[in-house]
Image (cartoon, one colour):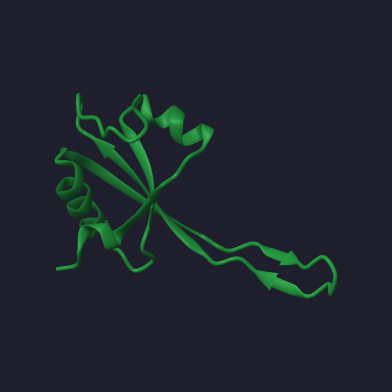
Length: 96
């Protein structure tokens, strides 16, 4: 079995992800080879919460031109997971 902290890379910080947190849906950047059951088990193992559903999406890297040489480069592709928790479960990510 893979280490759960190798599957979950980082939380996604955006206005949309903050709005989803109010509905107990958390968004994470995950390893590109991670499957839905692996993400499910990793979130439950790290934070000890009950996961109801996992949705994943692959994002292609954007093409960018460099400023001086005008060469074309590409940002790396990423994979995100939107994890829905059971009612009443919370992950203390950005709590003050």
